[in-house]
Length: 216
Length: 216
DNA sequence: GCATGATTTAAACGGTTGTTTTATACAGGC
DNA sequence: GCCTGTATAAAACAACCGTTTAAATCATGC
Image 1 (cartoon, rainbow over the protein chains, first blue to last red):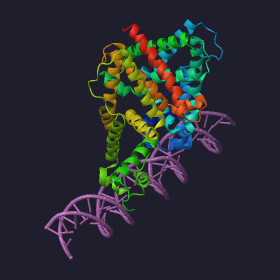
Image 2 (image 1 turned 60 degrees about the vertical axis):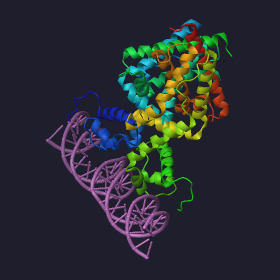
Image 3 (image 1 turned 180 degrees about the horizontal axis):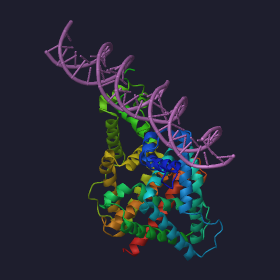
């Protein structure tokens, strides 16, 4: 029970909490489970460090915001106005990286599950996540989309289309068990991610082409 | 507390449980809440009728399967081999109905939330839902997709593409709070659903066109 | 080496959980 | 009438919940 880790006890508790909250839900997770999963820590630490179980929940959300900022740094607000072809290529790599993260990075499962649950409950934590990670990323996607199609990046059509593209990626994380079972896969290894990537890339360029020849 | 309802007490309990399980999660919901929401019934009824809270959870899943069968009857296995244009129109109405259901029917929120949660937990109830509602509907979608593009309806590409289309629809239910906030809407009224429908229809025909001119 | 503050521990708190028990009301067959 | 099985009721059950308390341990500056 010595402190040999570089991580502080506080960080250990947060990491365990994100994993458990995401996997089984906030209410279903007990602080004793968290303390145990954090390396056999004491139950009282949750109250000590975070005030309450609800405080720990908030701390988890803030940690997620920080972690995603580290993984996907926000692009500078004003980007060089690339051409349509360049913007399309940037869109492609953006969605590709997002898919890789969602299907391949192990910790993404916990993060996505946590965000998903908070999203359904629409509590106070939802605001932290929306302001911290969702809004900026979506705006960036819309900016690229506007450049690639030559349309208003903040039009209602663009914003909704951006969500429809995100939905495609996210389903392969949220609906992963369904996809795996229906495809007869044993999981989503890098080879399967490439297979999905081909589908999404095809969809992307097809939709972009439709908007370019008829900007509505 | 007389039995004036046409619904049996059992059905009342299941209805209340689906609503509460979907809205706040299985663990977060107490059997006393359910009994109260079912019209002030007694707590012991849950054990009496369903054996346990977990048994009630299974009964909810089976009820959801039955209800969705009632709303979206499965198409007969062999459909008249319609032409490509007819198949595309059928795809369009199918996704359109699905979106309507997901965004407009009030009870869809509870059903979708329930399914979503069970999907994340991958327990025994997930099997009931996959076998009962997901597999058949996805196969039907693939069949139509095959007809509309002239490709193998059970190829890996077709099955994945079908999921990518479903993902687009589902995001507007799962991510509803995000969409509403980002678009500055106050909710998703029928007018907003039509707006989304335009986007999804555009995407659908664009992707179909891509596969038709290059079947890969 | 001792005072000081932060960290960790064990134990207990009242309250709530799912379930069981026991008793009561109510139907229909004989 | 009574008997039988189903349905509802109230109360109690042990187990567990999040939180608090109070004491022990640790690191650190002086």
